[in-house]
Each structure stands twice: as structure tokens, then as C-alpha cells.
Amino acid sequence: MAHQHAPRFLQIVNDARTRVRETNVEEVKARLDRGDRFALIDVREDNEFAKDHLPGAVHLGRGIIERDIEERYPDTKTELVLYCGGGFRSAMAADNLQKMGYTNVISMDGGIRVWREKSYPLEKS
Image 1 (cartoon, rainbow, N blue to C red):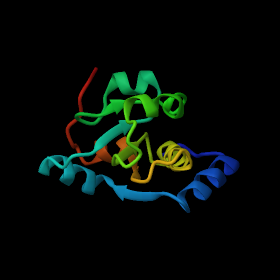
Image 2 (image 1 turned 45 degrees about the vertical axis):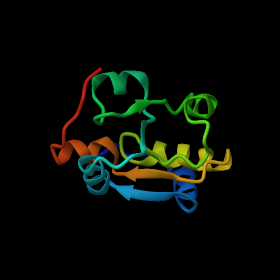
Image 3 (image 1 turned 135 degrees about the horizontal axis):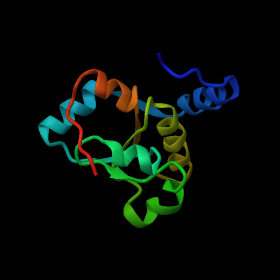
Image 4 (image 1 turned 90 degrees about the horizontal axis):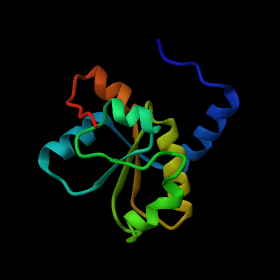
């Protein structure tokens, strides 16, 4: 059973989603399989990333991504695909990165939860 999020949290997520491009798990998997070039960023907590993550993902947790993104990806045109547990934190992070001037940011709706449901491959730290 999916976690029930608080109404005010959902309100800010839905607000962010009005400004953020989203993709789905199937499209990200297809792009990885094709070898498309983009930065895949896991915005979950450290312990979540350590448990498992998408192949090739870089960890920039929700608490530090705004602080560290410029050092890791100085070109604001870099394609950044963000994911989290279900697509909520990644939408909020994508919204903030756009406010910082990043122009090619996408949030993966469904997050690692849907990725797992589809039995797509995962890596461990």
C-alpha cells in the first residue's frame, strides 16, 4: 500500500508539477537501454540510495542538490533526469533547479517504486 502523504505536502508537489516536465519509468528505461546521454540523479536520502538505485545514477539528495548541483553540473543546459521514491521529491527538486536557471530538467513520475514493480535492474552501493 502506498504511503498517504499529507495534504499540504501534496499541494506544494502539485504546484511544482505545474512547472516541471515529467517523464515515466518506461521512457527512462528505454533511454538507458539506448545509451542516451543524460544525467540521472537520485534525490532520495543517503540510506535509500545505499539500499539500491537505478543503474548509473548519481546521488544528490533532496537536502543538498541545490547546494551541490552547480559544482557537479555547471552547464545549465545539461539534461538532468531526477527521480525519488514516487516522483514527489523529484518534482520539487526539479522545480528548484529550474529556478536556479537549469533549462533541461525532467522528473521521473512513479520513481523507484514503479521501477521496482516492473522488475527493472537496480544497483547497490
